[in-house]
Length: 455
Image (cartoon, rainbow, N blue to C red):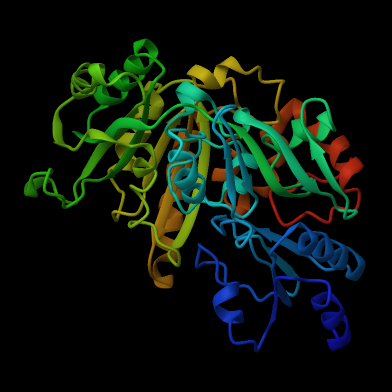
């Protein structure tokens, strides 16, 4: 790419344009997952929608790959590319609240932490994920599961409208009445259809939650009791089950430090006078070996994993969706969950019943809404020399769970070598997604993702 072309793009931008050799380029090209060490030709740090339009037009006209980066958390590394253009939205991170209407508007570069910080000041919450540094855009476009899913639905279920820059460089607003086909597609179809520069969400009056982890001895009865508890407890209780190592924390006996356990991370958004009843119900699931549950500001529970999962570690994930913990699945969890090798790794199960089932599977592009649980086998480690061991553990675990899993899984939990499963994942929705892709991105400019190709 010659200097005149680069200069012509730079003249159209208010934000920064970085290329190899620039002082800030090396830091700017790094992404969350250190396994992806790619070298884009240019990085645009957009400051506004006009910068997004200019960059999309430039990439299309020059025939360059275009990677869209929100929080940069994409485990498959879709926030970067080789020899193409990275459009980094990180500086577009403003959040605006209409407290009377309980509506929150957030720019496309916001993280979950940005969203929580501002909305909490008004006593409101938008259903999000579980790590505050996660990019809001990727989270929402894939679906968005977190600590309020059972009571308030997925992030995409609470989306009212979105401003999108299309492959043609047009700025359009989509909702249920304007471009309803596009609005359907971006609620679960990922970043295949354009660059979302602004999201408008319905927020909920959740200021605090009663939450925290309870650690149990590794036992099949805990999984059965967990499943039974969710079937009868009010949907204001969200409970994430995990196969992890017990932390060396003061509330865990030293004899259990770094031992495999079942953890249940609960978040009760119901009335405070029922906190003790909820705690008793959770504690009754099995032999408790450690517990720390308290009433906290809602944003706090979304920071629990932040210190454990900073930028720059190595990640490899596999995902599954399922109806229940079958005997076969429980055996697989007990075998492979017991082999988790470090505090950063584990299997994490998200319930997607309750309010998630209030939305018809046909109403959004989100896949596997009919299931009750969505899981991810998350291998995370520090050194390149351990790549084979950790990816092998994830794959073995995934293979053992596959017979008891549904077709497809949560698109945001998939690995880069799962791209051939996109068709299986969306199933009967795929044809409609392809038709919408053909309308808004016929030449597949937005292909650095779990790609849905035009029909």
